[in-house]
Length: 625
Image 1 (cartoon, rainbow, N blue to C red):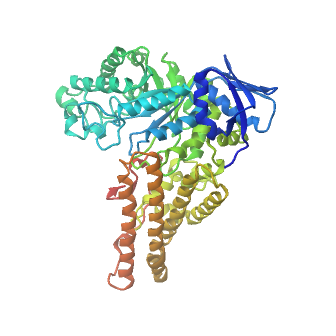
Image 2 (cartoon, rainbow, N blue to C red):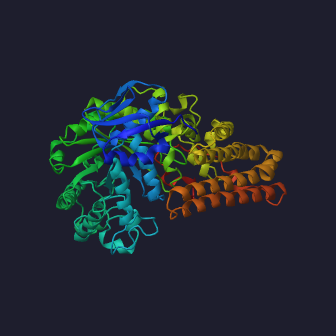
Image 3 (cartoon, rainbow, N blue to C red):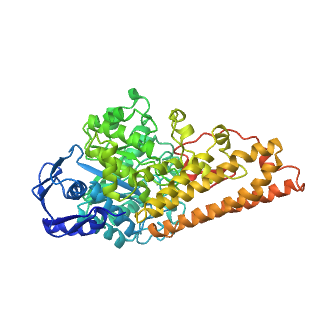
């Protein structure tokens, strides 16, 4: 889309000026005899334009580029203005999951860094379980699209020019199933996903991992993970040492791990949940039981920063959980989530709701660092850039707790060049959201999109949701609206995302129409309906499946490493194959060759939805997709 071009003349230090050339097309400015831009590093963040001169005030380098975006945005319509922003948050960071199927290319990460710079992010983390190369460990990240040392350095170099700190985000205890499946890792394996405590080889491995990744980056900070090690000590560890209480194992393990990070002069942050859970405390829930006892606090290594992650499954708990973290005396960071892990698109409504709660709790308890996470799932259906809407919302609410929709619209347009409404409406993949009543229970009715997308055409585990509330009309209307966006936004850099959304909605409209009618028609003996499904709708669904498959493939190949795409080929191919089987069974039944269609004889039972179920979204009772 064309923009009203602003002409700027930079009178700033070379280190600030060099990256601005990358941002000309994104922000829509050119260089020449125009507004003179001056840089003022002080205690405030903002922009003043007066008399043809603009002062960009910034507390740290990345915020100069946020200020540049504000200048261009407002200079299009005003000759003079003064804008100074909320300075509560000292660091704004994003964590990008590169460990579940999709590994963004270096160029993709660089493009994302451009957007993060103008939004005001000062830190970024690449979540790498095993997706980095380790010398002498050929199976670490094998066939997973792992980053080389040179690729990590290239990302770090690019971010450094903006002043954005790239921090390694590792897993140093649990979440290691992808590596522990290989015989090479046998000596350091406790359970299927947890490393073996009290094993010297384990700590040699961890030292190699930490030294390798941190050695590629300038940052002296490291995130060591340590979350969700549910079954620590219950596998090979128990065989060797007998039963040892989880807190004892965890605290001993942390001491050894911290001795490694101190050797390399690294400042450690970690997910905090196991200090609660290993001590028998809920991670949220009951506010009276969420305070870590003094004897547990005493075991947290000195200087370790605690990252409180919370994505909204217990609304209202942010305030007392942030308080509980602050009471430990350790620096606390907050991590929210963009709800990107639940299918082809994020659920922006829930993300905005939970982000607002989390940032409000941070302000209340004076937490100064906030992170937003872009988790994925074992399909990684969601394109990284579909998260720009949530990234922009998070940034605007961090810099201005009162940012209204008008302001957020303008900032989103400036920082992305995209259509605010089109990005928001991608959430309609999950549900209609027209009536808030069905979503009071949050999970049980909210996240329909991925279950309906992948559920089996004959064994639909989620059919009862559609019997209760048909969705085919909703998805058809969404497809029509996205077609309108495609026509109206010619030249928009996100045309590929709008096209993908259109094809996903178009597919779901037919998929849900079949699901709404197949079992009821079979039970009622409506042979004409069954004939229409067999002769028209199932062939049409195959066509729509191939169309969304192709669009998804092109999008993936443009933004991710190719290794990992095989999952999606298998899944889309499976949908087509099952359509062919359904058509065959319906024809045999209608021709009298079969007296029944077994899957349609089974009574459909209700199955609840869950926002955290979809790491391996269930398609049939007999398998996963």
